Length: 262
Image (cartoon, rainbow, N blue to C red):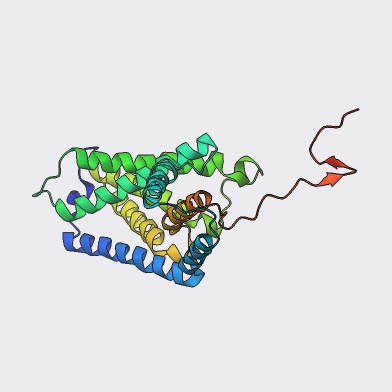
């Protein structure tokens, strides 16, 4: 199962051109949805406005070498290692989901375009990576959904409570789940269940890539920019988007939160 290209097997009933067209349409939905989200929420205007303000109010000059160092640090710490998460469980779940998603999408595109039929067999490692990526998405996504979410872990809400902000993670996990179930049913030679899970796989994947204006999908593009802006602001002596820390309130001459001295 883990060395079988599920898309090559599907080519017996669905022409490779249909699969390839679908992947292209999903990519266009990502690009179009992200641009719409940027225009609708004015994220780019907000980002560049704050960037200009940061440069205007800078108390220190940031050299070109320092900027390169900040960009590398942002890529390694904030993007690749998800350094913004202080909670280690949440960071691990996020990394599993993020890297699993990247592996899952990239291997899908390679198998659909480069190895779409049994006549063009894929290297055994490629479908294995596809399965591993989907399993990583499921492991990180379900762990986050049932055990780490604040409203579930801290507030005691039902893990099955769903709001619009959950659209991205739910669609992503369901896409990976139904993809695995479809591939398994297909390798087991069960055409009925393979068709059912394929339909669910296509629906959940379409929702994932087609709902960008209403989900948090585009945040994966905004967060690196925000992290870079924050590091530059710290380097040039400004604090982007954040006022200076307020003093702790005092009650009867005592700082709130400090122990009394009798």
